[in-house]
Image 1 (cartoon, rainbow, N blue to C red):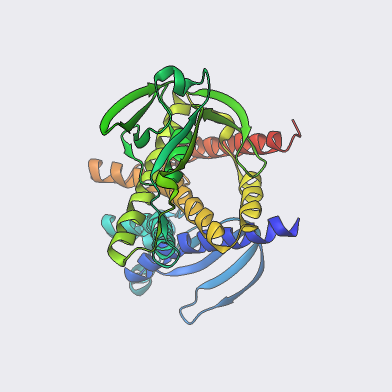
Image 2: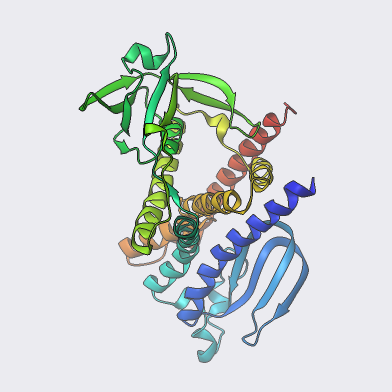
Length: 368
């Protein structure tokens, strides 16, 4: 059990700390007072005060964190307008809610931004010091009566693109197939020095993710081999490492949004949505393969955390940004009553998502 819990806690502490530090950095930059920097919720386990009076602490429930600003009633930056008027002039300069709209927006956006930067830095370091695979993908076998054979793919076809995404590595093929959400997958291949496009309708089967976790897999029925049986693994220079790192963060973000969009319209597989239990399990399994796979999963979780927090749901960073967008359009903040109504809706949505994800996790463990 410890081999799962310890890697999960390390991953969670890092991505949550980075997220909250993004808020903290911009808050300090614009002179906002910070009273609490918390990793976790609930009862404080231990902590310390810095010179500026911020309480840095670790709390009992490690599933998240928060930065509490001077004058806030709670960790969600809710305030009492009457109480704010009682502050002296020097203290009023430290109040988050009295800062200009653009500063409040940057402070809120700083958390997700920090998560994207963390993922970018992890990918950049991996590509520079470990390397990135650029082995071209060649079809070595097409299974009989498989979707690939029905569509017309053949042995020795060199896969160039999948759904208009360039296949730069043999590792991209399974990733692009798995992340596709449309009924047909477009394969662009090179055959006899000609580029040909095929539409393949994948089969969806029950399988596993290579770590023993049950998932729904999209398969087309092909086996791959390196082009000319040569593996091409290259350590990149800073410029190329930065380019491919930025692309990876972009690709993961867009693919995640497409997947969530497919679930909303009823075409996606909602059973693959997981919560803390599944994340902990996968993190522990990946950690057994070494530091690089562990750092990679940390980067992907960091992207997910940043992306989810940008959703326009009250209680999340995206909800605050939504309120600020209304404030910009209306020329004034939304009324307290309207904000409270949105917060209730946001709380319901978050609780529903947590329940649904936890149910999937328990189902994955065979408890349902």
